[in-house]
Amino acid sequence: MSRKKTITATARILAPLFGLLLLMSGCDVGRDASPYAGEAPSTNETVAQTSDAADAINTGAFTTVYAYAAEDTDSSWDKNSATSVVFDGKTATISGSGAEFVDYTLTIKQPGTYALSGTLSNGQVFIDAGKDDIVRLVLNGVSLHNETGPAVYAAQSEKVILILEAGTDNRISDGGGYAEADDTDTPDAAVFAQDNLSITGNGALTVIGGHNHGVRAQDDLVITGGTLSVEAVGDALRGRDGVAIQSGSLTLKAEGDGIQSNNTEDDAKGFVTISGGTFTIEARNDGIQAQSALTVTGGEFHIKTGGGSANAPVREEDFRGGGFGGRGERGGNAPIQAETEEETVSMKALKAGKLLRIAGGEFYIDAEDDAVHANGDIDITSGVLSIQSGDDALHADAALNIEDGSIHIPVCYEGLEGLSVTITGGEIAVIASDDAINAAGGADNASQFGGPMGADSFATSGERFVRVSGGMLDLSAARDGIDSNGDIFLAGGVVKISGPSQGMEGAIDLDGNLLVTGGEMITAGSVINPSADSTQAVLLVSYSAQQAVGSVIAVKDANGNTLLEYTAKNAYTASGFSSPSLRVGETVALFIDGEKRTDIQLSGVITNVADDGGAYSGGFGGGRGNRGGGMPPG
Image (cartoon, rainbow, N blue to C red):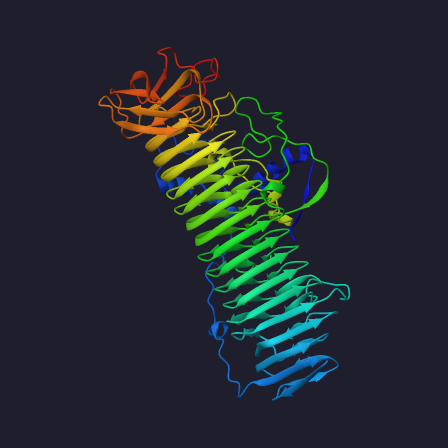
């Protein structure tokens, strides 16, 4: 269970400063406040600007690919050479060598294969083989229960392998009659291995962790097959050094975490890597948590954490300390909340302490807290994600990088948040009650693991930016469509935004400059600060009257060809446009719902107009001050 402390509003405001001081120790603090000076950086240069921040958080060699041993995937066994154990309530019949049954305990002292069947009503399978031995337990239609300790307990041995025999149903459970735990190594799971534990085969296993955890290994927990159902008072599956899952059908219900790896001593440990399987996870706390790296390359995931997004606390709107372009506690325009001191828990769906990578798989997430969260980088190169989140859908303390994939977020507080957000491809749709995309600053206390990597640690404004060079983005936000505490680079892709047209909120809002060098942009909402260094024409339009939700905005060329078109998802009084088809010196026409409003000559890289032929007002009812190119004086 990952616990944190919420703190007073004053402390929450100061918290990011401490994270900043720590982060700057590994950063070039002398860089310019803006990540470009007079010209647009290349993609490599932009990425390099976040490397210092990322390196300060993501130190070490992370385990992102797991090398499965041959025995991890081998479910075959020889009935003639295996030792057979048949339980009958409180007794057992043993055929073969290496094991003995005394006082309701089956003790295994030698390496080898042991086939278990029958019912042990209140006892234990105790594995006491040599520390370099491998013991294979074939679960061949067996039910094991222990009221006062683990039902399967491996005190030592290099590896224990549970083979789920095809066509059999098996059950392992423990009760609540344990002695009080005295340290973190105390056996506290229905299946507990002091070293490595593997589960394979084509049978079914139900595990009930009535005392604390369901299945726990102090080294690596490996699953390569079978139908596994685990219900636990604590975590369903826990591998201290690592969890690796190749295939299988897993149904996990936990009052703690669904899957957890919690080694804090080595970045090469504390990992979770999943390459396949189907997962149904319902967890009171986190769905899948890795202390260092969480890597998913395949599988289908249905994850619900906390009470789901509908159970998230309602945020009160209070923008104290904001001012024009000001930031609340979380770096966007989130409200500052005065909170009493209380203990809460982390309820994220996917969480990594350092690095989170998604390179495949299908995810259907309903999270009370963040859906996908890393205290370092998030890299998404493939996969399908359907997310409902009570907080951030995707949150990275360092860099959030999206290369490809399908990301659909119909419910969230903020959609994509990171120190930097870089999008080079993929299809992304976001509906957010705050910002859809946010290159942020400030602490998100709900991110805490506890200890030194608890709060989000954002760096200086030079590392905060949003860069879009590819992909299809459809964004709808109650606050800002895209918000950056630094700059925004539009270099490619298609960006459609429905956002406010207000003094402190907009379709695009930023503290630096908007540099447009490619791609398509069309907004129902205000756009500020386009840079004169942009190389692609930007058109800003204000409307003489508020335009309706569902109205169709279109820009056409002199021949009547539609260059840009968008159906607004909110009411708006301003729009922003850019496209390679918009050329300086040419004339285009603005249409709303098929009705021509005005002809517009693109007089320069930045063109400001009103739809009634009057002066551009920014859509703010008289202007909001000059914040850079394209903004009128107040």
